[in-house]
Length: 374
Image (tube, rainbow, N blue to C red; front, side):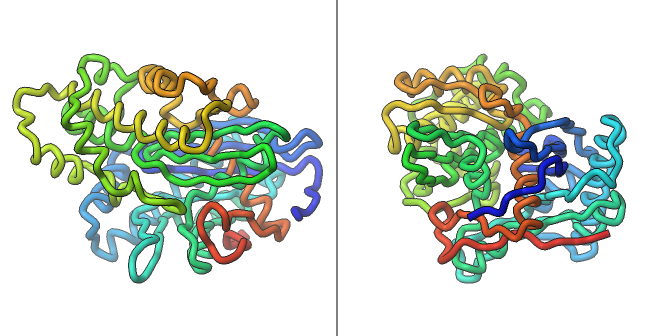
């Protein structure tokens, strides 16, 4: 059972996902009404740093000095984002109980002979440069007990979004999409469904030099390529049973290029490929949601919630589900994950284990995160 928190505490969450479009940072407060969003921002990541991280993720090779320097730079960027958010909202560091920092994942490999996950963003630096206790390294204890180490947010979704007597699905569409299935009897499950924005982002950047397809405008110009869609959906990850998690290590530009090479795509436009990638995300997500429920509310968060074409396709593919975003649950869809890590920091300081074994496949629920005090 979770300990009763102290009313009035403020926490900060930091999240940077596979899209690498910026650092999401949010202040949340524990009140008698729950965990409430107070303020948030999403400063862009310095382009040079972003490119260095992308290169590390894509090439999967890096000199140790470069890795250390990028780790340092990313931590400084996180600390700067926190300090600016505090200043902009007239908070002092002394008012904040802790920062929960996810870090930036550069490799996630839960299924190998030697399972591991690696995030950068030195929590020592974040604590030192903000003057606030930082909690980080949330995934590896779950993996130490045999879990996938991901997704972590279903426990937060259950704590904040579950409603007695009602089935709900929380759908996060970041670079990778994941679902949390909240059942009316308080049971919870969840896993990564596959690509969310990551393939669309990669193709948009390759073709247009744009880090993402704003409002789905590039995809709107194309049409779905049935043969390509069928080939992409044949990836075995989609039929793998949960618990499961994935990332840029699987779904990346190299993977897409290999798929395209299997088809005669010379007559297809780049916009057709973008439109097909959007359909891949929509179909793979909707099939997984419908495997759990024929009709229940679906609440969407993450950058994909801002793509009107993707949202429209999800609704068309799931006509019996009422789809909205998490603003209907009083949390900005762009900052749900950041606030989740603020909540995880709170739970770590309270000494609460996180109920995730039914999600990640771990042998037991674990105390997640390491504490770094300034």
